[in-house]
Image (tube, rainbow, N blue to C red; front, side):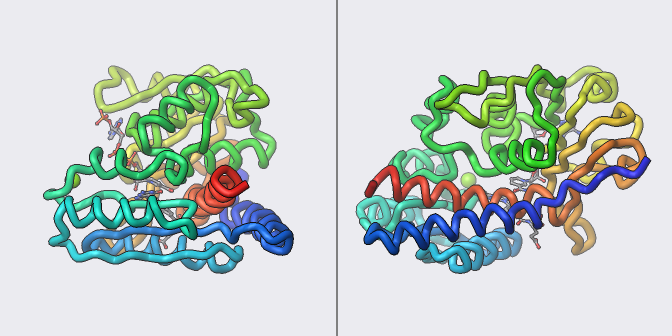
Length: 291
Ligand SMILES: NC(=O)C1=CN([C@@H]2O[C@H](COP(=O)(O)OP(=O)(O)OC[C@H]3O[C@@H](n4cnc5c(N)ncnc54)[C@H](OP(=O)(O)O)[C@@H]3O)[C@@H](O)[C@H]2O)C=CC1
Ligand SMILES: Nc1nc(=O)c2c([nH]1)NC[C@@H]1CN(c3ccc(C(=O)N[C@@H](CCC(=O)O)C(=O)O)cc3)C=[N+]21
Ligand SMILES: [Mg+2]
């Protein structure tokens, strides 16, 4: 078997075109143009690549966008002052503070300073709480991207065994929450799946992963998911974006393509979907804030 490719680049483009059409219609109707402000502190090269990609995707879809680049020596007070200014700016509907932040900055304090209505990453505890009780204001971008990459390729997670490797606050944990939840009108990306979360203390990772109909790798470790961890015919989503010898690689061993029914590539899988969901959320934020 050679796995079907879950093409996030193509699906992301399709969904970006949908956002662009809605933005154009909204602006033509005299409403506000959705705007995203991205904040990047320091000179992590990967962060600069992502922020540049986000900026271009916003521009292409007709969103207003600003990138605030601050030096690595920025103090917490300076960063909080910028966030306060963006919170108060009526042209800004979405605020993204690129992670990770330099050591002198308390990441949690900054994420909590973003006003929840503009928190298009869904990192603020109020928004995480709304997600947890099944009434999301926004879906977090990477988990939402994974949901659409599955659902729109005909792999509805409802009733399936899902195993997620990774339990971070930005990927594994919110994805597990979403996929386990009941799908309702208020929670259309509820997965109705049976979900297992694996991590570094999981006793037998191979045995746990082999239970999966849908296996999601979000560990940040190249090739951590090997072919023997995949039940033949399973669907595998690779969230990893790791830099190895100057190359971008995922968390899934290339041999998995011979075992899985479908596999998302890196690059061109979850990454472009994440950016697309950021545009979706920025449009939703403008509707939420301005009507
Ligand atoms: N494509 C995209 O849009 C995005 C991609 N990413 C990528 O996804 C990956 C994960 O990111 P993130 O969640 O932030 O990473 P974190 O480092 O915050 O979390 C990694 C998680 O994986 C678990 N883990 C690590 N190694 C193993 C292992 N050998 N076996 C089992 N579990 C393991 C950790 O377990 P424990 O909790 O026990 O330490 C932890 O829960 C990275 O490659 C990142 O670059 C991230 C965000 C968006
Ligand atoms: N506040 C915040 N929000 C985030 O959403 C966030 C963050 N911080 N910090 C870092 C992670 C990582 N992340 C990616 C986004 C796009 C790609 C992406 O588009 N990747 C392309 C390739 C990009 C390249 O060429 O390097 C692909 O996979 O095809 C990857 C990773 C968002 N993150
Ligand atoms: Mg820090």
